[in-house]
Length: 494
Image (tube, rainbow, N blue to C red; front, side):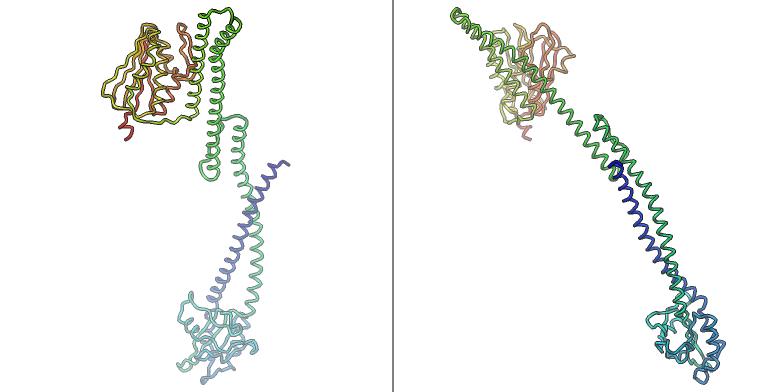
């Protein structure tokens, strides 16, 4: 027998035991209530059947003669009545409730006075609301009784007091009650056991069927079906289990996607680093080895030329590494903008001045188009400088000699609009949606690939940190313009 089967059987027996105990408790309560009500109904029925005994005795006999009990007449009649109905015990009371005559053995009578107020209350009440009275043989146990006044010459001489529940009757009732209890208890026990067994089986299969369905979905998920979800249990504990598992599965799948994306990024990073850094390293290594092997035969001009190539390669290598680290920090959310107020027109002018020598070498015209009263922006000045530098580097890469690059600044309702436009080769419409992806470079045979293709990806990340987006406007052969908006100082503060 497997562990799952044993656990399932334990669950079944637990459910059955709970229902059995519950039904047995309910059965015991039912027996007690039934016994109490049966006794109550018996008492009411006995009262209805024999409630007029005392009245008949008082009517058809003359219990008192000259104010005293007439035992010669009454004893025979009362004795005959008690023989015919052993449950009746007849007493003769005076007007104060004192017992003045009876037929039962004298030693069994323990009290010789009954509560006359109960007698009067009984006489005044209707049949459904008559009280219990004193039992001379058992003073501490109220009993049903019958009473009737006895008159002699229109004068009240006393009462006939008939106890309708004798000791013999109580013995019989007790035996019957025990028999009733045992039979009811037996019937209820076996009925409860049968019902509990049936309910236990049904409940067990209902619960285990739902659990098995859920377990099957969990197993599918475990075996690699990450689309597996539990359906159909919206409420209760199973509903909570369902929603919890589905949420957990979504989180796991999302984490898988993130891990996959991270792993893909790592592979791309290694591939691109190994490819793009290899070229300047190879150039540097080749020229250094040449200088070492031909150090005595190289002229001074060749040495200077080789050193210049090595220097350019180190600069390129340094720029590639710096871009790589910059993007890695942005991708890991390790960069927090330190925003401040500054004039972006002054920053743009300083950057163009730094690029002027490079522009002169390539015969490219640099210019800035900005109004004189432009408000300051509220942004991270270093990150904004990186954005402009990357956009200018991208423009220089694809702008031929004799072309122009323009930084245009405008004031808009949303903030300060920045546009870096060139007269380069442009970007095909089908490629414009992908140029901001990491390591994406234009597939143009006329332009050699330079760098790792993460310059524009860095721009996009930086602008996202400033809650801004970048837009590209381009047409093949007619140049490209990149546009974005930075918040003005006053509006950003608000």
